[in-house]
Picture (cartoon, rainbow, N blue to C red):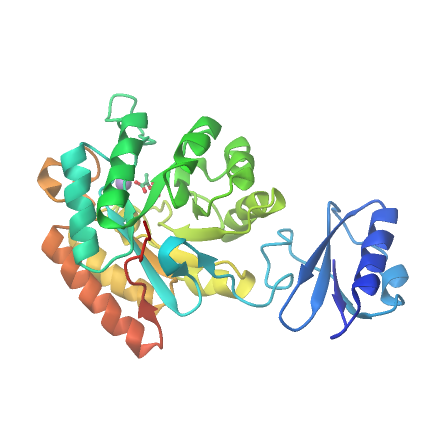
Length: 346
Ligand code: PEP
Ligand code: MN
């Protein structure tokens, strides 16, 4: 439930509402907004009797949040969330962020080359896994901690921001010092202890849709992050399992406008994992921007043929340049623009 205060309601009136909610045995969260303050009730599972709150001074209306995910819902927060990163880069609003790089960090040379090519093409954020969730235990698992140092070096040398995946709470802590965005992968979308750890981290989180997760389940997983106090959450559509083997996954672009209607959180799209096929990545990246995605995540490798993971879906550097050019053109048509590389000080 959400208690919307009148424009100009006093701080004392807001505090009175908070106190009454606490007396009722729930947790209250005051959310000052540009126009008016709202007070949200968390920690309840069902409907609450609103009559005690409706009559309090300064209260304009009481809104029942009908969705099981509360803080993530548009009912709770009508205006779109913009996640702000270092150097003036933003995800959400009018900007479209491009997160690009190899599937895995393989060596210092490889990730530095990738960082340069990503930056030279005009993208703001470098991706690359230090720890990789692989279906087979015999596949390349990532370099682990040494890869974080390489990512830090790439950031320091080129100014690109870093997005990398955490697979457990320990990873969240280790990545927190290096990354600008902590990625939670599709296979871990419902790893609730990981979600709680990332929810306590003071870093933006990119949450990927599980390969057989409904949109409601994605939003409920995001709710774990917000419930722990982390409001800087970016969702990611990366395709779901289907009966059709023509592509690696069924890239569900409908999720973009559906999520925008249900939630205030930004959502980006990953056509690399969504299709699994290099020659399908550019067309589907274009489609994702046209569908209103707040960003795209793509795999690009300095030498895709030698990649240790996901080479078949990784773009060649010149293809990435083409993708950036086309994404910019489409963004302009719909009144948006592709976020520029960061201006990192120091
Ligand atoms: C990745 O981003 O490299 C990855 C493993 O993606 P997903 O979790 O979507 O499969
Ligand atoms: Mn990958």
